[in-house]
Image (cartoon, rainbow, N blue to C red; front, side, top):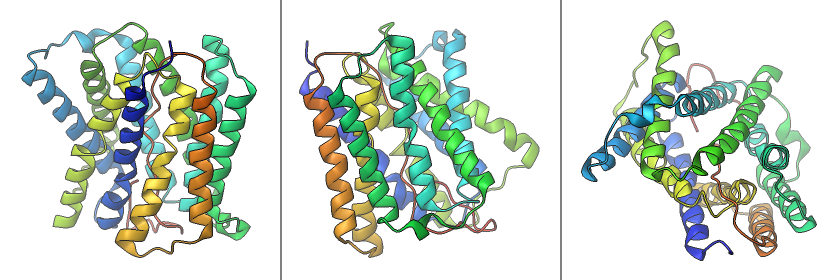
Length: 316
């Protein structure tokens, strides 16, 4: 059975929603601490998910009794924290490349743990998509990757690797046929609990302005629960390798929004990078013979290039 077009549409919609996390971060630049934003965003997303479950009269605590839900929550929270702290020490271009390289690790893990076939079309699509990210992030200018510190690069890269394992873990969970709303809400709730741990030691640095609170509300209520739920809804028919490639569309969405909202330049590199990502997704989807099933992790695009000053902290 070929995956329904509806499930591909769910992934594309989720990519669009995740891509909008870019303006939410940039508009509130310098007004919040990344550790607090990580917790607040995950907590708001979890509360929204629990509210949906309550409205459907399916709210119960059984989801929190399973170790894998806590393990996935811990991995997701750690990925957010590593990326948010890492971007303070490196550039946005490096962050975009190092985080999204997890598509390669996802493909490898799917072969190792699920014996997923890796035909030439799938490999070609992955290579084309990664090339599109390179073009978008660097504009083929090697100097754009200059600057930053190795520590920041390492943190961001580790976030991408963690999210690769998170994706594979989500597939194992999805194969059990769980309620996608309950699974999404449960993982976000456990992620929020884990994300609160470092705040107990570092204090609770609240946003310094109304803009910061608005940014947190937007990031928590729009590009967190809803897109992850859409991905989980298509877990049993779309391979994680395909999902992780389609999620690269969020980079295209973020680039378009940066042009419309912040007057960032729209040039041939933006057009070419977006076209390569779309073409890579097309190649992979056209070559997919049948269902697998999983969801890509909740990565987000990053703001305009340049190191982020430590006093003015920003999240994706």
